Amino acid sequence: MSVYEELEKRGFISQVTDLEIKRYLEDNKVAVYCGFDPTAESLHVGNLVPLMGLAHFQRYGHKVLPLVGGATGMIGDPSGRSEERNLQSVEQIEKNLKAIKKQMKIVLDFDGENKALMLNNYDWTCDMSILDWLRDVGKHFTVSYMLAKDSVKTRLASENGISYTEFSYMTLQSYDFLYLYRNYNCTLQFGGSDQWGNITAGLELIRRVEGEKVFGITFPLVTTSTGEKFGKSAGNAVWLDAEKTTPYQYYQYWINVSDEDVEKMLKLFTFIDVSKIEEVCKKHKEAPHLRKAQTLLAEEATKIMHGEEGLQSAKNASSALFGGDLKGLSEKELRTIFNDVPSTLMEKNKIMDGINIIDLLVMTKMQTSKGNARRLIQQGGCYINNQQTTDSDYVLDLSDTLHSSILILRCGKKNYHLVSVK
Image (cartoon, rainbow, N blue to C red):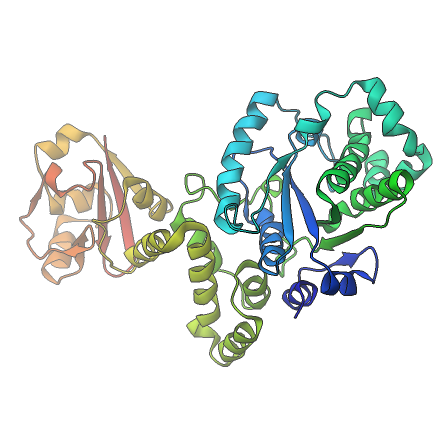
């Protein structure tokens, strides 16, 4: 099987610039590039689609060139946007680049025999003057050609219009393809379906300047069955950085994928063999309440991004809501897990002096009276940090807290309360 067939089976292919691409990839080992926007210190799950796609190319022996747009990131791509992006400084973009490369190394091999090579387009554009650019690049683009692109037409029709800065973005990305063709023999660009106009502009520039034919493949922009788009600009970002989205949150995101989306997500976001995915999803449909497909997705996706340790941490955190041990969890994990439960702020000196469990249950309004609290405790329905207590005279102090700052109270199976000690 060729990489094209692999990508096609997994749902990575939306459009191709030429139907010959399938045979081309069967007969040749090529250099393929995909651009990433360095506008944040972390990639998000939407960026995982092209990363996973590049990983498949690399696994089939092709040379992969992830390109981070240090130059184009200073301009901003108008594609798929209704307003202009905020421009970033060179220093901020450089900081973002370092963080992004660490995440790319998790999915791509930067050290093997067929190692990936991360490039920054700022390196080949920073020394070009505006006169150089207009003479060597701009002259190959007619205004009518650029105005015909959907990304430009959409912005022209919008309330905010389009600045000359963003209008020129197409020429920058096209020049990237030309530069990579000349210097790395790159003959294929891989990008999101919203990049179709930029990709075809790059093909046209290479045809005009070099008289050669190159190719482009776009992948579909991943949305849920409800039409919700992945991505930080959509306000629902699931970050790859564990500091921004903890392994627990990451795991929970995948475990909550709908039945309608789970097969698609397994094919895109894991390396599990397609035949196995289809087999698991077939069994899942027979007993969807068991959520076996979602569990497989959550485990594999979390393991890819956060390793075995991150997966175990996520599973431990997940079990906390079902009475699992809390002592091995960090303060950040605990606050994340119990972020949505009712909470009470308690001064540290109050618990240092000691507080009776009955008084605490009433103070936090978990019980309406001391009598109710006493009965609950005696019947075995009260838990401190998921540990059952049947002593209604028990006095809590700072040693009962987790990380000297948290108490988790539970009444019954699911009634939680977070006491934050400060």
